[in-house]
Length: 399
Image (cartoon, rainbow, N blue to C red):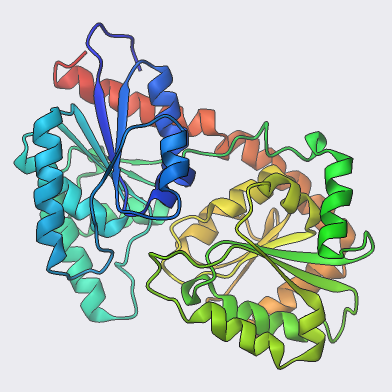
């Protein structure tokens, strides 16, 4: 992005502050380094203070995550007031529903550049009602959108096929978030003392085979299949452990899965000893280092799954479902393994394949690290965003 006398004003709209703090902040930080004035609009949530602590002004606007809700009208109105008052040059929207509301509000306010950052579509939802409403909403908002970024190539192709955007208006980033900090996520830089403390905290021995899950503990992340599969794995590998990092956000619509998972585990004496819940943690590189394989068995909604890219950067093989995000993050057989969505048996077989073959894990891990540096590094991802911003700002006469 070019230096300009006039500060370009950018508003990022996210459904939840967690998305802002974890997924969008790397982009916002680099934009600020380019001299841009960057702000956020989001709903209340546990990560509001963390987002504010990054130094970005945050406006709280209730944005419902349901496809249909009367409160959407209020959301559009409040966003319109904010955008009209502050005269942003760019409104950059994230997440499905908040992107629709944000683009409507930005268009009504006359914003010159309106960006849709497509992080996960519902166009292939098993529910035909969800599919049709999502496609219709994206088509309507598509007329108002200046440019679209996708995080996987499947969505990049589908958005054109469905007539939501022209091919020239779509850029695939091939990675979620703003990319991975491959300097931070580097196994060569992990402190051995920290590792010993973590092993002690979670009662993990160096001889244990450790599978890991990082994310929200909700049904759509495939956690039921993960527990079912791991229950079979421990019948064959006695020293296997499952490290589950994450929890449930107040904004999550699925508030029952976590309790059901814990109940499921409590009924199996062996699982009780083998599954370790850590809650949400910040030292993710250090925790990934503990793992032999990272697992993300999400359903169709997963647009990418940043933990897969982070695992790759840490030279760890990963197992994911054959979803759009899984296919984008993993080269099956080279950097990890892909299994069918909702298939606990296939997941079990994949875990056992890597658990019983350390040489294969090591080979995949090396290939994954190389791919992370070449494809997922945050500098590479941001350069793609920067290129489109420069072009659009120039086209609109804003720089």
